[in-house]
Image (cartoon, rainbow, N blue to C red; front, top):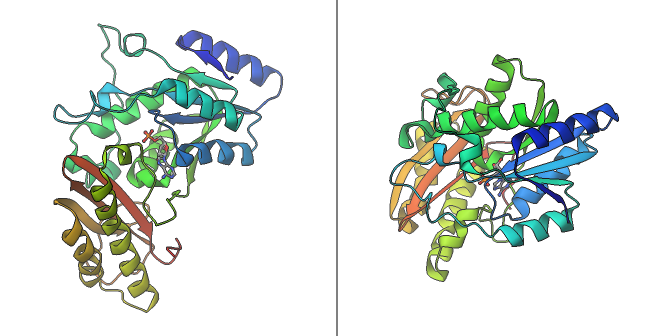
Length: 287
Ligand code: AMP
C-alpha cells in the first residue's frame, strides 16, 4: 500500500528528502473517487520523468458553490487506496479541511481572463477555490511535475497560467481525456447517473463528434459548428449551461470563422448531475 500522509508539513519533508536523493517528484491532485482518468495522470508524470508519485485526495470545499454537490460527492477512500496501490503510487496525501483552512485562513489566488467565462461564469468562485488549493498543494509538495486532465480544460489552462505568472517551480502537464468505450468522458460524477441517464449522457459525445466531423470536412463557421454540437445535447440533456467554441489558449470565443486552434466546450445537466466535456478541433480523435 502507498504511504498515507495527512499532515502538510510531513508531505513537504518526504518530498524534500526524495529530491535530495535526486528523485524527481510527480503530483496528481484529485478529489478521489478514482477512475482510469485519474490513474492516467500517474502514468503521465512517470513518463515525464517522475520517480516518486504523490496522489492527493481532497474534496476541496472552497471550489464548490452553495448549491453544488460537496456533501454528496463520493468518498470511497479504501477503494481509492487500493487503486493507488495497484498503480504503484508512492504516497497518498489526504489532508483534513481543517488542516488546510484553519479558522483564521484569509489568503486566496485569483487568475484573470482565462477564468472569466464558461465554468467561471456558471460556477462563481469555483476557480478561486481550485487555484487556491492547487497553489497550496504545490507549496506542500515543492518542485515537481504536476498532471492535470484536459477533461477540465479551462482548469488546466488556469493552473498553467497561475504557475507561469507566479513563477512556481512546477512543470504543469495537460493530459488527454480518458473515455469509456462508448465515448463518455470518465468522471467521478458519472456515479450519480442512473442506467437511463448514463445512456442519455452520450449526447455530449455525439455532439462533440458531430462538430469534429464537420470541422474535418472544412466547416469553419463557429455558429454552425456550435449548432451541430448542441442538437444531440439538447435532445438528451435536461439543461445546458454552455456549448461554445473558444481559442485553445485564451479561451476567448470565436466570432469570426475559426482561424486559430479551437476547443469545443460543453457543460450540461442530466437531472441534478452536471457533466462537462470538450474536444480540440482538428487534434483530438473521437472514433
Ligand atoms: P477531479 O478528481 O475530478 O478533481 O479530477 C482530478 C484530476 O483528474 C483533474 O486534473 C482532472 O482533469 C483529471 N481527470 C478527471 N477525469 C479525467 C478523464 N476522464 N481523463 C483525464 N483526466 C481526468
